[in-house]
Length: 81
Image 1 (cartoon, rainbow, N blue to C red):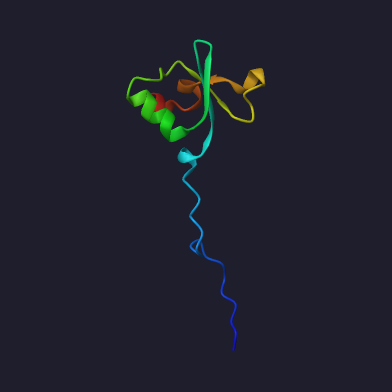
Image 2: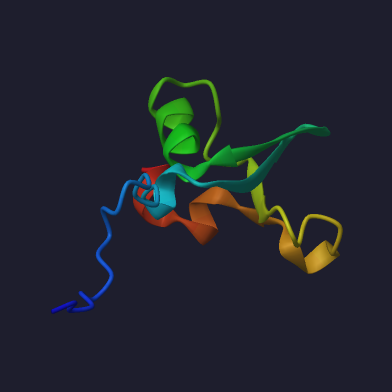
């Protein structure tokens, strides 16, 4: 008798990375834009003093729209300190 089992997360495929590790963010500081980078990398960059909390961030899909850029401290105050 064959019984179909419901799909599980671990059927030989890697699990989806946590949202903070998905490279979907662009960072802009003093005219220089880098990315796409993960939110986790941005958080580590702020903690290490490499990225100022005043730098701007945009979702990679929104980077070319003026409203897409916001200060990291405004968009993600929990990581900006």
